[in-house]
Amino acid sequence: MKLLTAAQMQRLDRQTIEDVGIPGVVLMENAGRGMAEHIMESFAALKPGPVLVLAGKGNNGGDGYVIARHLIEAGWQVVSLVLAEREAIQGDAAVNLAVLEACGGRVLFAPDDASLEQTLAQQIDARLLVDALFGTGLTKPVTGRYATAISWINRSPAAVAAVDIPSGIDASTGQILGQSVSADLTATFAFPKIGQVSYPGAGFVGELVVVDIGIPAKVASQVTDDCLLVTRQVAQTLLPLRPQDGHKGTFGHLLVAAGSVGKSGAAVMTAEAALRGGCGLTTLACPASVQPVVASQLAETMSVPMADADGEVSLEALPALQALLAEKQALAVGPGFGLGIEAGEVVRSMVANCPLPMVVDADGLTALVGHLELLTERQAPLVLTPHPGEMARLAQLPVNAIQEDRVAVARDFALHHGVVLVLKGARTVIALPDG
Image (cartoon, rainbow, N blue to C red):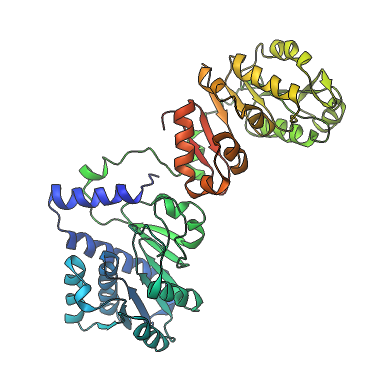
């Protein structure tokens, strides 16, 4: 499923309106009608309401007026509350405001704090709230009466439906701009946005549905697939087919270099994960001092003791490790490997010299800090799997900077260093070397 930034969606709208010639008011009608249908389906038990539509002065508010009109036509009791003066409503939104009023819709205006608080106090019986305050174009923190309205929405026991995106979420990153509406249903338009599936924003979206607003296929097909949401269903299609007459020799042999005293569990879990992931054969190379421990816990994994020093792998193990690469198809290194000087040198040597596809995780990533030139010198594929703290050390950035725009950080690192970067977390970001 393709994911868009706010800027990409704005370009789609502009192309549709300016290049194709479909008026913006038509797109707004399609958006509002489509969301109204989802509202009536999802909240049928709440009919006839009352419903309160909270609208900003922009096009998101215009979508709200269309929604209000279609709900009224379907027999719902709807009040629309505009957080602006009537004169501030312009363009397509003004057209749909006039249509709503001409169709008998009740519209209230609250252009200041006092009028907003007074009006909200009179709407406490609403059973459904429609958030049409801000759309995907929001880029700065919510303040003033809009912040007041969001707080009121979140305190209300009523169900909440958000128009395009819950107000207060950065559509491109998922960051919360001050505060955000917490929705039960979000109907987004044309394509889902990165911020709707990225935390913390994803935690405010509720059920996410996509509404077709009439973007022509000619225009929609120009959207690149540089950012995709990989669902369980998509992931299943990416797995290679396993022949029914296959056996352990058919599905590859992985070498795992992991573990140290006190961290043998990491080695065990890595080996088990390899088998669970589909490897036919797995060999675990670990320090001699922990090999008996891991061997007793792994019934299906072969284990090889390596020369060690103080419970971690030593440089003397390098020749044996190189020999173990023969007839293997991939190498995983780093889980529980230890942070000692020699363990770090072993990791760096393997990154520099291993001709196989390779995954580096955990302590292995720490060994690469300050030595990132090794990444671009490799010819075989390399996958790095940091959590945010490890990513911060690799990229020399604060953790909060990593988390504020995980997609951009992962993409930039992968592009610059020629690796597959798997930035772990809630909604793991996988960035390829081509961006």
